[in-house]
Image (cartoon, rainbow over all chains, first blue to last red; front, top):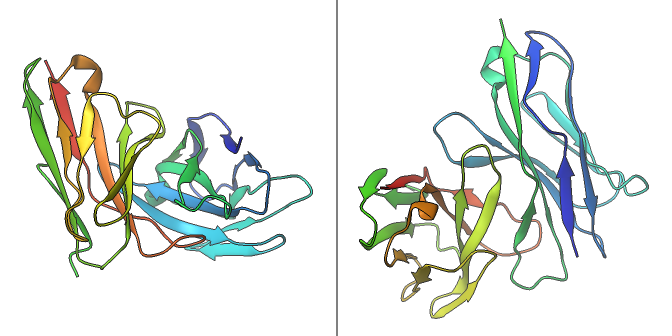
Length: 114
Length: 113
């Protein structure tokens, strides 16, 4: 079946450091891939997405590229800020699933220290 | 648009009590979902609906029930609350499928003592 694996957290970085959060997936077809972010005390919100191989999603300085050859969708940011502290979730949507359920990773907590 | 709203924000229940978590969306979305998020964990799907009158079980449906009589509302019912149901509950909605975005409510933090 479909699955999403994220690197375990917490990830602790200093402000202005480079960020990578790894995400790999298993899927039978050609899924759409997502990164959602959950700020403290809030619900999740979409950060970025990509719908086909080699697509790059980007938002708020974050980027992720859909790599079919490595089944990965790693999240990157060149210079993190304290305000980026949050939990980040990688997810996939299987186009063969008519109910359009998202398959979620476990989440990676990011802590940015000033 | 208010988006996805959830009530209450917080609730403490005693073991064996029942309650309904309310969820409403004003975006005319067809798909709605209920998730639970345990401390330090990811999301688990409880129930979902693909339209008014249609609901189905997710990964962890035991101890819960849902109904979808209108497009806007998707309440989650807890019968005979147990400590294992202590969690944060999120409702989400989506217009269509595929690569569409799920929009989340702010969550309900439930404690069962």
